[in-house]
Length: 67
Figure 1: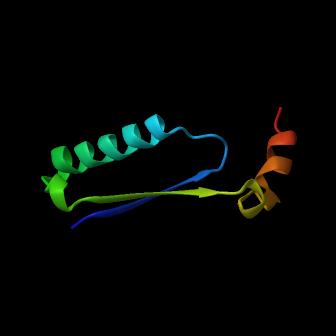
Figure 2: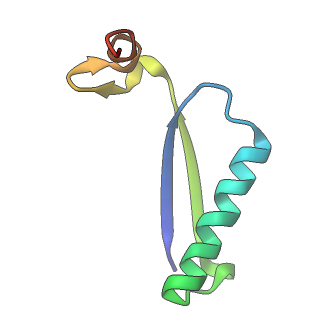
């Protein structure tokens, strides 16, 4: 019973995009590991930008500093 947790920043990921992620991850586990899609669980968590950090900075500040 595979469990996959995808975490993305909360920036307008659509229902359609989430459905595509769920289908794609499930298909990958079926193809590579021969897992049963009926018992494969995929959870998508959307995280507020204030709660995500990169390189020691909140993600918004990190992005501002990128060239």
